[in-house]
Length: 184
Ligand code: HEC
Image (cartoon, rainbow, N blue to C red):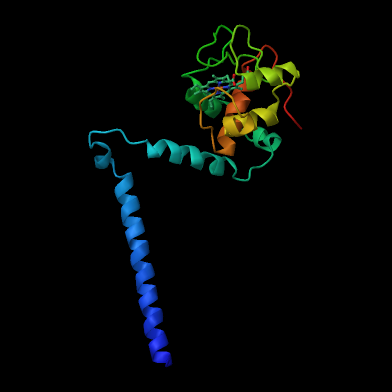
């Protein structure tokens, strides 16, 4: 076989590969297009699973230690970030349990110990060990609740941005009878 023919074959293979990729992209585009979903029968919600799959990767972004981020955190921004939790949680002394437990005094509190809240078995187990929430564990839990605590009933994807978590945790620290000492 002359090098000319080899080139032709290589070219043909390359062409086929490009075509196959093109079809792949095209069909991926078609599948995720909304109009298809309105076809009169239920399709699984691909956006939900895509979001769940993307969350751990985002949360895994390398971050400064929480002690360092807290030193630069902003409590007003943290109060704003806490609105993301407000559908399920209250943070104030006069607050109540909702879909999630009351988070007043949560920093340094034994995990799973808000009075009257029915926790998941996973969190009850931590409570049984007497484990307490500290800045590190709150940071990890809020980044990705299900990765930190398999079996948790907290249905929330997490906050991927490390500085936003620090703002929020600084705010949560303030929502307490006597705020825990900041880590050095
Ligand atoms: C969709 C409702 C929902 C949202 C939104 C939500 N949570 Fe939760 N959260 C829960 C539930 C339910 C639990 C109890 C989990 C369990 O028992 O495993 C929980 C537990 C917790 C706990 C443990 C409390 C304890 O007493 O041990 C913390 C801390 C917490 N959430 C923080 C947050 C923060 C911060 C946000 C916002 C960034 C947030 N949650 C958003 C429902 C929610």
